[in-house]
Image (cartoon, rainbow, N blue to C red):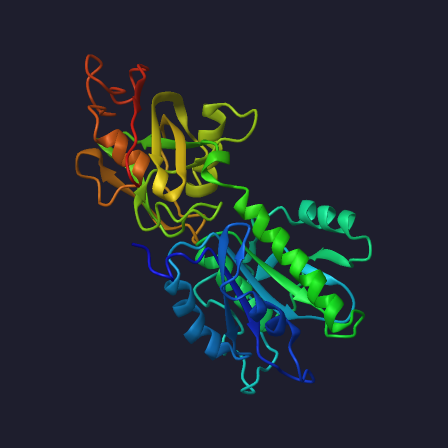
Length: 372
């Protein structure tokens, strides 16, 4: 039986008072929605301190408390005028002093990330704003790319970095600037409700498989080896599947893109290798984990290089390594584990099930449902 925390789908946060504000409408609004069912999803509200160290201590514990979140909405009070949905969060610089008269010594939200790193929400905010303002012409709502470089943006960065699920930051103006308390509460509720409805509509029945692509990069300098790296992050759509597992270079197939072009692009972006030769499709797996709403069709492409891989996206993978196919590190990313569990061998002879050190183009397909 699921616990009450496991049943929570949507996390709402608001902030305590700070500066010249004697009331923080962000918390006054979100606390009224605590434990309320919205569009079939259960909502839980939490109050956050206007304190960098306090957020560092409390927010990870809050996130860990709810293992099955589908949406995070962080709320805060902004400038007078319109309501704003923030599209991005920056790693810094955070120099504005908090309620404890402190700021991060590094001026960064996460010192291990690049100082200029910017994280983006995956929610279609422009479309949602258009829908809301069309339905309520008196609603002053817009998207923004400047969340203020204070506790609001600091918290939002942490939400996006966690990659637990889609996340967004919602700024409301102070009461009376321009909306009365009752009108602001109504407008804010409509915005929050619309965000939740967007997530609720993405039920498993509405989900569709996605197409990923993985590249078996080999080299004559490393017989029997392929390039693998340990994933630091989950999927860009917020699905946590695969974090901490070992995977091949790869990514999503773009519209109109061939397997070969996708393989070359992904290996260049992730490994800094631009010399791939003998690039060809050799296998496909159908990887499914219904408990995580994860379903990817993954073509495997073989290619050769004479170069050395370099980790180009440190937020996704610390390092790429040459590892023997017969002794790959564990755990493996689900599609790779699924392929490895079959008879497929990229270094088998031409008469066997494999690519024969790049000398055979026979394809090996497997269709299986297995947990990630």
